[in-house]
Length: 443
Image (cartoon, rainbow, N blue to C red; front, side):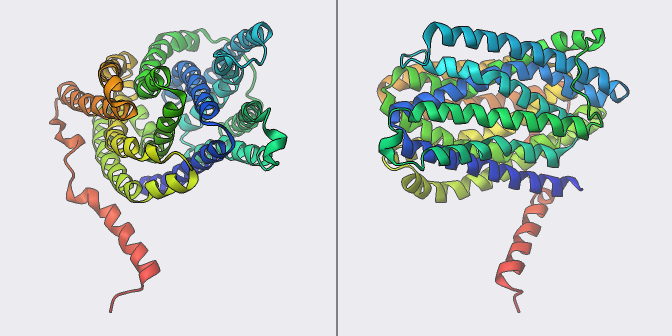
């Protein structure tokens, strides 16, 4: 399948994935109080942070498989060992946490549930990386829709009950559905990943010293880089959650959920170009990065325009009582356009150059700007200040990344952002095809 066709189908899958997430969030907004809903969202970001931390280490296996195809079994066996041990450790911590605090309703509750879910997110993320490294993008797209689809089905079943019958345990039911969805998705993803790699019995654990060292040397730095990235990405939500009342933080959380649809869809190009950046020479990697960055800016901008026109109505319909989320949603959109493009440049540093350390300072600068701006703007502007801080940090960071790229590659960095006539051709062809399909041929 051609790169452009693969990218198109990936964008469609990402759109479906985002739609499922949006529907799940809407279901929870209908079923839970604002305080419970934002607590659940906070628990999800905690679990995502843990998944991101371990995912940094498993990035080594996604990096090593294209580099060392002759030793694929050794890479996978070492990955199985690392992810298995990490999952066991966190599961023991989660068990001890529940024994100490139970399912109580204090402020530690989202942390306990997040710890319980983390091992499943480790396995799910690891399987996804194996598929990405194998360039099985179609299968990667399919498995990425599993968890939100399963969760939506579970949540729909739970909250189809009369409200009075589920009132006391609805938040616990949401947490249980969340964990069950990750359990099923993780198991299915690993089975598919092993089969696509030609290792139907690939679940064995074995320590291969070469890849164990790579796990800690490459993966360790990649892990730190990804944690800094998630700090940058979630900084505004966490500070809003910490400093503002739960009802206002819940409203801001809806703005974040809605705007993340853009970032999910724009990540299509990043997924498709992963193998090309990782497994080729530097000249081709530079060209791929420039092309990917320009197309990410173009596609993200087009999606943002469509979301600007349609999502306010969707928010009003899907989230009764959350209309105040529209303003921060508008502010977050342009920031996520440049954030999506920034991710392409960071992927070049991590995968093409094999320098995950570089992305630490890249995301670190953005996270510091985000935190400083939040601390200044939140007291006076509330959640709108959080949205401004987020978009401002992404814009400043993108400028810094552009300058870095030009110095490292010794090419003019305008290749990252200056749109060319040839870049528009795929979009014009797509538009013409849509017009012919639905509007008929003009006479």
